Each structure stands twice: as C-alpha cells, then as structure tokens.
Length: 137
Image 1 (cartoon, rainbow, N blue to C red):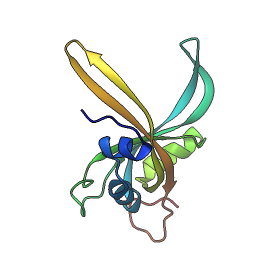
Image 2 (tube, rainbow, N blue to C red; image 1 turned 135 degrees about the vertical axis):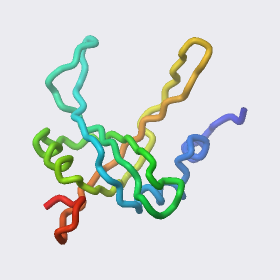
Image 3 (cartoon, rainbow, N blue to C red; image 1 turned 45 degrees about the vertical axis):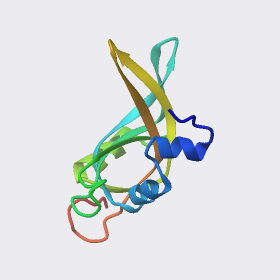
Image 4 (cartoon, rainbow, N blue to C red; image 1 turned 90 degrees about the vertical axis):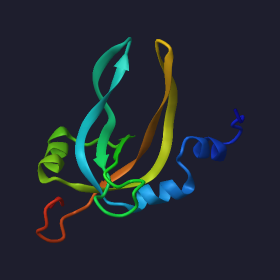
C-alpha cells in the first residue's frame, strides 16, 4: 500500500479530490435531517451545543457520482433547534462550501474493519425566491 505523505495525497486516497469537492460544492442538496451536536465531558453529554450534523441528499439529475447520494457532514455553526425544524418542515435545499475531512478513524467488528471518514463544511440554506417547494422563506 502506498504511503500517504501529504494533505493532497490523503484527500486523493479518501476520494475527496479537488474535482469531487468542486462537484459537491456546486450542487444544490436537499435537506433530509439536521441535529444539534453536543459537547461531552467524562463520557457524558452536556447541554453545550457545539454545532450541527446535516444529512443531505444529492440532486435528482446531473452527475451520477452525487445523484441521489447521501452526504452527512458537520458544521460548527450554532443554529437553534426551532430553526432547524423550520428548515426540515419546509423541505429546504442547501449549498455546501468549505468541505474538508474532519477526522478519520477505523472501526473493527470481529474480522471486518472499515475506515470512517467524517466530513465538515459550511451549510447555507437557499432562500425562497419564488413559491417553489423546497426553499425556505
């Protein structure tokens, strides 16, 4: 196996190449779910909000690499739960920017092992410019 020595190599090995990043950031994604992330102390969840985890689904048309694909990413922006609920109720669409690999960790289950990759980025809700479904006023 090739040794990964630079940030560029890591991104290419993990499939977040510059081309893929540009493709993800240029698409309009549908918001499926959003939940607040909380800080942990001594293996117990606290009341301190640290960000949001977003579950998105890719466009129904366009490049097949992201068409109808799920994308989960975290952002460190603090958003109130009632605002997240309003986005979900409205069937909001979003744009992603500043996409990056936040962390990588192995998960071993018996004889099988997987590599988990956590993505981070900025999620911007697309404002409603007309009365079409899927936008937030």
